[in-house]
Structure formats: structure tokens, C-alpha cells
Length: 346
Ligand code: DP6
Image (cartoon, rainbow, N blue to C red; front, side):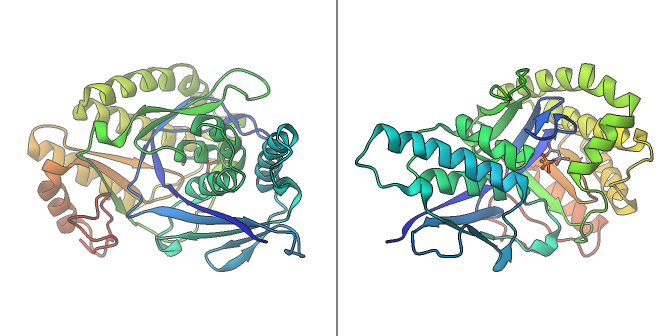
């Protein structure tokens, strides 16, 4: 007999960035962070988890059609935590099938081209954890599951929800209070849109995991970021989202991205994720806002050169039109597939 469950998890893009670990093994961050979830119509991971005594090769994982290594500490931590929770259920209810001891087979696919160079570890680990939790019929809430997904990849803990999601850093040593919660559902601010400018599909030079360790170890500016900048930005961002104040949301988003990249530049030796095209995208956003006479677009960059622009549906013609004119050969995704097709060229 094969037991099986499937799920999808969305991509999230942080507007207050996670950068820095206080515990690298448990993936405990040096600061809280906040993200906006992209629509699953455009960007998501679909994962099927199955288990059976007949899987004679033991646990296995397929990513976009290729066999993938499961021996990594992060994947192992997720498997172990989920199995322990299933084992506890089985111990308290003898009529449940003993799934916790069976080999797991995980099959995972992204609906966006891997070549787009978009970080997929967040959606990937969130979908892996949710799929196994569904297979095991675990009663845990998304916040409780976020504790497990966090151990796969920090940013993954924010992909178990839709909408606007905060990852509270917590202060306990065992990480039991370092989890995500919902700030507001997507329906709270349904006109929010994200445009992804694929500046380069190449794999990034310095991984997030290693880059943030180098920043923690060497940047003085980073100390100010975690002590003052991020706590203030978290507060301002939550208020802006609750009040649906786009100008404030945009300002904090851009300032926080700039602060994060300034800390990368202050890392020794310095880390540069943005390139000339990234900086052209920043100028384009500035010129869109200057022309509009108010802030209608916000840029943000993760650990790579690709730009995510947030804007409101009512400003779509202005924002998308401006980008079509400014950057050549740029692919864009809108987080609402109803009017612009996923992957449509702008
Ligand atoms: C710049 O979640 O990829 O995207 O916890 O080591 O897996 P690990 O790092 P990861 O880092 C994401 C960094 C970021 C900012 C963010 O998503 O908040």
C-alpha cells in the first residue's frame, strides 16, 4: 500500500529582509522579517509526499524531474521533526497506520522556469513540510509547521501562509519561539501586485547561507541594522500594511532593501548582489515615482541581481508601461494571472 498527499506552497519575497543567523544549525535569525506572498497561479512549488513499505531504496527526493540529495542536514532535520510528530500521534492512537517508520518519497516541481534564477528554497521547503504534514495528518497549525520549515531554509517558514507574513525572531535558545505568523491575508490588500524583473538567470555567486554568515562575522553596519533599523522597519511595515498605506509600504521596502545591500557592501571582503541592470531598475522606479508625483512603485532585491517591483493594480499601466520602455528583454510576472499571463513578455 502507498499512502500519498500533495500540496502547493507559494514563493514569498521579503520587504523586511532576513539576513543573519544567531544559530546556524537551527536557522535562528538575528532579526525578524516580513514578506509578501506571490500568487500561486504564477510562482509555486507543487510537492507530493508518499510513503510505503515497498519503497526499498529508503527515503528519496525528486526536484523538477531530477533525483536530489536528501542527506543534507536541513532536509534530514525536516524529515526527523515530522516523523517524531507522526510517531507521537501513533503512540497515542493504536489504530493509526505506522507511517512514521516507512520510507518517504518526495516529488517536487516548480511552475516557474528554474532558469528564471528565482530563489525557490522558500517555496520548496514549505511545500515539503506541508506535504509530509498532510500525509501524516498532523494537527499542527501553519505557525507550528513554520518551526519545522525554518530548519529547512529560514525564508521557508514564511511560505506556509498566503498574504503578508512575519517571521518573529524569538529569543529562546531552542528556537521554539522563532516562527511565522499571518500579519494580514492577501484579501486584506487585494490590489497589491509584484513584477519580477529577471536581470540574470545565472546562479548567484555567494549563497544566502554563506553570505549572511560573512556579514554577521565582519560588518559593523550590520550591528546597527539588527539593533535599530530592522526593529523600526518591522513596526513601520506592519502599520503600513494594516493601514494599506502604499507610500509608506514602498518607502520601508526600498529602505530595507538598501540597508541589507549596504550591509553586504560593508561585509569584508564585500559582497555585491546587484549589478548595473539592477541599479537601472532602481533608477526606473525612482523616475516612475517622480513622474507620478507620488510613490506608486517599490523595488526590492534579494541575494541576486533580480528586481521585484511592488505596485497597486490601479497603477499597472503606468508601472508596467514604464518598465517596458526602460529595460529590454525583460520577462515579467504579475501576481494575478487573470489579466497578464504568467511569464508574459512585457
Ligand atoms: C535575502 O532563507 O535562503 O532572501 O536560511 O540559509 O536557507 P537560509 O537562507 P535563505 O535566505 C534568504 C535571504 C533573503 C532575504 C529574505 O528572504 O528574507
